[in-house]
Image 1 (cartoon, rainbow, N blue to C red):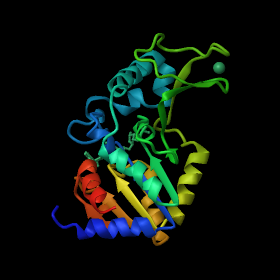
Image 2 (cartoon, helix red, strand yellow; image 1 turned 135 degrees about the vertical axis):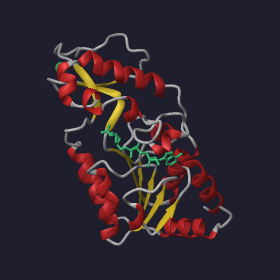
Image 3 (cartoon, rainbow, N blue to C red; image 1 turned 180 degrees about the vertical axis):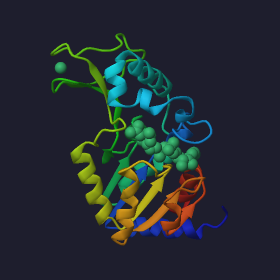
Image 4 (cartoon, rainbow, N blue to C red; image 1 turned 180 degrees about the horizontal axis):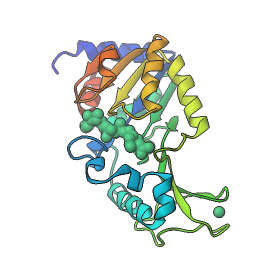
Length: 245
Ligand code: OAD
Ligand code: ZN
């Protein structure tokens, strides 16, 4: 890692950018102790997405789906942001037009101090009613009632997250596309870049002339498109960038 010039270049590009965007995935929270989805010890090796993270699974067996989310909430609730989350929050302070687009539902970016966050896949600490417009934050671990019921209409509550086969929240997706197409630099940290439409955002940025940086110990479908690909963990990247900011 000794070569700091690449980090200087990235820092300069960020500081001089009119707009910068960071896109994150599960990899940025890995060093906080939260498992990723893909890879050797990923969640989708042990569980089948279609049995747990789809609207059909929830219709068939809401209790099972809620137990899986309750388990994940249990895994996440005592976890702390790491240097990766903190450097992203710091970049927001430096760039006048900064946006963080995350696929993560764990809430760690907010805990690290990020404010301008677009949560593409929702948030595990929010619940919403399947029938009415009721929505609430619920940080309770463990959950008192599984599956929880809507206090307004008695229907089932569901986690306010996006499942396979569902559309992303329209406003979040439109904002994400807009900022991706108008940024001058995009950092893509800790995503396998295989889940759409999130995986297309860096392609949109690149097509509009943005400088694309990937931070990921592994190669992804995006790697060859990037101007710089850093085969580092998010925290290692954060430590190096911090030195030259
Ligand atoms: P994945 O689990 O697919 O990918 C995690 C990526 O992080 C991999 O490319 C790893 O190489 C990389 N990685 C691992 N450790 C890292 C570290 N310390 N620092 C940086 N990178 C590291 O997670 P996502 O790309 O976020 O969707 O997955 C996308 C979506 O698929 C998720 O939002 C979720 C899932 O199904 C929904 O639930 C809708
Ligand atoms: Zn309701």
